[in-house]
Structures are given as structure tokens and as C-alpha cells.
Image 1 (tube, helix red, strand yellow):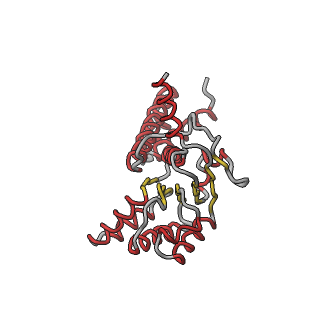
Image 2: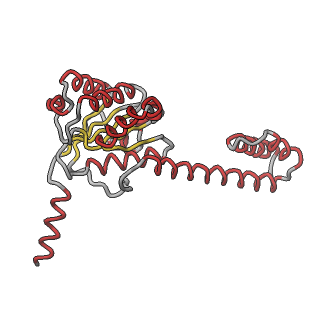
Image 3: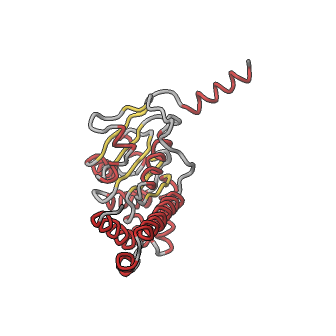
Length: 254
């Protein structure tokens, strides 16, 4: 038996679900005035199912638009080669609390040790939580920025980047960047300061950034903006790719 209080709560749930779907307030009014309890329960189920499907589709669109090279998650990821700073926990990483707090992450270590996997997993999780995310290698982004400047669409691209919650830049410092590219990257980093989260993967220590970006002062300014609200995650150990290749060779020889 449904009590008046239970019915009032049910009608309110219907009204709230309708509002979330941007439907008329009249939906809730009709349900309250003319619907039986069973009808109200069924209507609430239909509205909530539509909300669930819309949220699921939104997450899928965010993941697709992010441009991840592969689909990676935290499931089964080994942290044995990752040294997290004392002020930053695995839980904060895997729940994307750092995105909500607009905190940056710099993933530093040798190649083939899981930096891109971890960055991608964080990006996928961010999309699942509804955060607008984009993944680029640094080379891809520099070329895209330079092309946009050439075509007169740079400001539009900058606005798109500014609208993100999380920007992932992979292979930072792997390839030297010319003066124009350095200036464009600096603008992206500056625009992101305290307005979104950045994840950078790099095998280049901070002291050598000036040699890659042609300007020591610009490199120092980038580092300052990244680490002011950021954490450095250190990766140490043997390359996964090399280790797996050696395992395959050993298996083939046996």
C-alpha cells in the first residue's frame, strides 16, 4: 500500500526526471493529477531508462571524440614501476579527482614502461565520468596548431582546447619543436593554467626541456605552470615492450 508521503515522493521523482530530460513540467502535473501509483512507477522507470541511455551515449561520444590511439583501462594495470608522490594516491588517479581539482600530472620515465597506458586509462575514466577529454601526441598537436594558424582557424581551435576538462599530451619532448611550435604549445599550456587538467608523458627530465623547445625561458615558464598545481609520477624499470619481445624470443627458441 502506497502512503500519501510515498506517492508525493514518487511524483517528485517523476518531475525531476522529466526536467533532466528537458521535458515540460506538465508531465509531472499530469502524472500527479491523473496517474495511478502503478502508472507513475512505470513512467518513472521509462524516464530513468532514457536518462541512463543518454548518459551512456554521452560517455561513448566523449571517448570517441577524445582520439585515444587504443582503448586502455585501469583494470589489470601494474603499478610496480610507478612511484606516486606522497600527496597523490592511486585512488585520486583512478577516480579522476585530479580532473575535478584541475591538477596536472607529469608522467616521467623511460620509453615502453606504461606511461601512455596509464595516461589513456585516466582519460577513458574521465570520459566515463562526463569530462571532456582530448588525447594528442605533442607532434600531432603542434602540426594541428600550425595548420590552424596557416588556415586562419587558430582561435577556433584554441577555444576548443579551452573547453576541455582534460588534455593529454603524449610523447612530450620526444621530437624537437621549432620556435613557432614552441610558442603555440606555450599558449596551450598557459591557457590551461588553473582552468583544466593536463597529463604529459615524457622521457625528458625538466633540465633538458630548453633544448627541445628552443628557448630556456619559455621551457622554464611551461614547467612552472605545470608543476604549480601538479604531481610528478616517476616510472622506473624495464621496458614492457622489450621484456615481452624477449619472452617471445625465448618461447620461440625453446
